[in-house]
Length: 471
Image 1: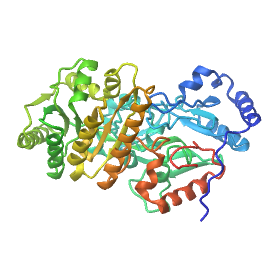
Image 2 (image 1 turned 90 degrees about the vertical axis):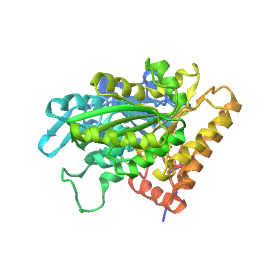
Image 3 (image 1 turned 120 degrees about the horizontal axis):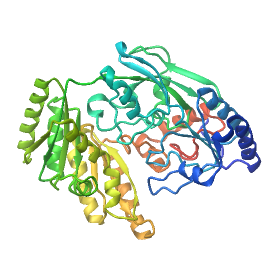
Image 4 (image 1 turned 135 degrees about the vertical axis):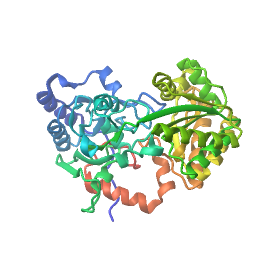
């Protein structure tokens, strides 16, 4: 088995110049080499060093993407897909230069099949735009990663979010897709059928591949009906362990909660200050139930009993749409709220996921580690499926603090892996988590991944420097 990747070096300047000249002929002013635009298309949300591309191509069709890929393949120039730039692991950086392919102009809804609960969209469409268009038909797309991400990026990183405990992740939501492969060939995978046993599952291969195997341009998505009744509430706990224990009992009892989010006391304090809400500054669960009026009421009563058994405070309901939206907007703004705890700091947003039975133990140990290490690091998580996030806010000019944070992240991942979990539940590997992949999967599985990458992308031009070390 051949696993050695092509050498990773920047392309020759003449090759980059030839690609830029060819793309300018094809795209005109939709090809930008301006410094500001290039920097906007590199990693800006975390402490990962920003590595801008040589040029940014603003495409409007699958055929234009195909033309870009073919030209880059001819000259062995890297290609970096770009949606909204909301990923957190350095996915959109260009460590070897190349062309950032901005798909934000590919934002059409191509078809809505209401009877079959599916739709076909272009990769640059964002989830909020789709849900706004679907609302009058009584449908919605439930996967909600917080940021108003594009569907191409959500599929590429196998995103999930607050609704995953009930509605699953992008792995479950993508029925079919269209992708431009490194050779420039256009491949269409899957179908609108709800299941298939026909050949290799190429859809699942590309979902979660982080742009390293192909560039997704269209997707067929599974939809859901807007529930008859929605109710949200908050419940305070004496400790993060008590809150997590309540989550474990809720899931184990089969209660069909739609959202169940944990905020530790530091994150609650940050949200209160940033989003101007007034939540009790103790560990908090933020919940939402979907169903009929009767089922929502029954679910809420059952959860209240579970929470009371773990020493929880009063369960406060938000049944008005405006009040619910305000709560969830505060949750979605948690990243920015955490940054505001330390003006001038940079975020090290990271996540792990563990089996639900180990959740309380993992979060409690992580909380102790944060306190002992002396970090400003709020915890927030989609704890219904064992996934939680930690966001140290760091002075990147302080080498000692940077080293402490790096050690903390290493221990966090090691803790999750030792408990049968994963180094990332939804952020993906990108650049920043490459070193953990072999710890999680073992050298044989990583060697197989390398073989797949080499077979599909023999020139190593598709988002190089991501997922696999040296590939």
